[in-house]
Figure 1 (cartoon, rainbow, N blue to C red):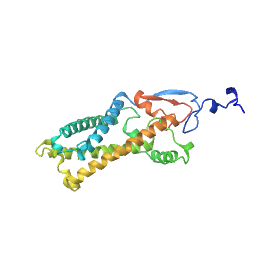
Figure 2 (tube, helix red, strand yellow):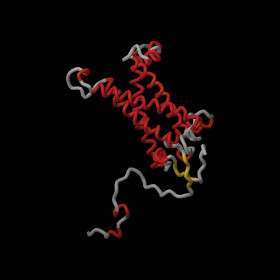
Figure 3 (spheres, rainbow, N blue to C red):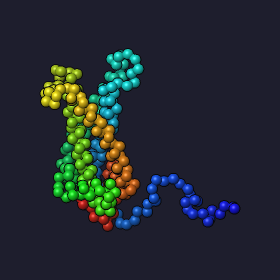
Figure 4 (cartoon, one colour):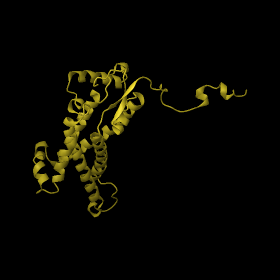
Length: 253
């Protein structure tokens, strides 16, 4: 039996392709452009992201040197370069942190403190609804936010706390290389309070892994929102805003 002509084949046979989910309808409706993230915050975001990656790579090397195949690490200046890059990236991260704290009060309504930390009763109710949305329990009842939803707010709050912990422990460890220096005198008193320098080192290392676990989850959820929810999360941190459907109610509008 001869094969039917192309005109009689279904679309899936005419244009075979591999995909993991069903085709989505083209977006329709009335949209308006909303500016969400200002240029200072976007610059801080990408500087901090790059700094964290560099800090993780160099920090893991400092903790347990790799690429060293023979001899003592002191005979390879690679360790010196790793420490220099690590401390430089740490300086950039601290500077972005200082500016971000200022921006919690000077930024727009999506960047200020109330929009970043879940401090209102409605935030905790919507956080529960958001969890059910991500678990696909009641996806149709998820609250809509232009900026961060409460679950994102909680996760970013946790990362800011982790950033403070990793910075303080980092300064304590940095001060050990110059016991008579200013950094040592400012932070050395904290080590005995938490159980000694080895506990400080352990906390610093574990907090690094908290960032390494958070990064792929953060990237996945952001890309998921762009592809499935049409939320423009990824593009907004580049362009500064996104189009919002005017027919939907947004909690933070």
